[in-house]
Length: 145
Image 1 (tube, helix red, strand yellow):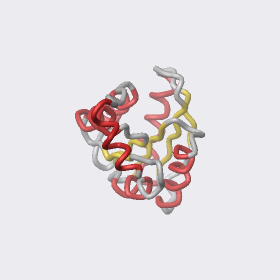
Image 2 (cartoon, rainbow, N blue to C red):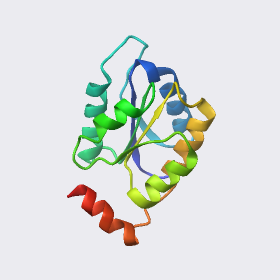
Image 3 (spheres, one colour):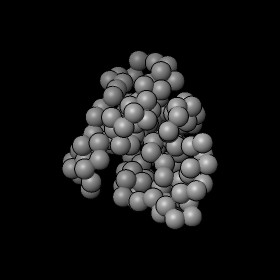
């Protein structure tokens, strides 16, 4: 566990899994802010993804976790924001290497794609893997520029 501030958000299709991940992270000692949504009433995920990504880009939060039906929509929207390197993860290897090599700062996944326990494993690996800088820093800087 770290002192990082994490923002978590979902649309209606990720609401149930978001709540489970929020509980898991807070019980694990992380400082997590639940940005919503708070029910399964349909909402427009681009608005939620943008608002949460802006909070990470501005450094108000260190990292973010976004959950929708597939993870793809939230990821596309988050990556439109300068300073965001969002990744869709459906496996632990992608979670690990997205941090090691790409210094991702937003994790996205889909409630309709992965189950609760895999999502917890992905979060745990993603949150506990540090960026390997070295040769990868040049590439991350190229992405940013």
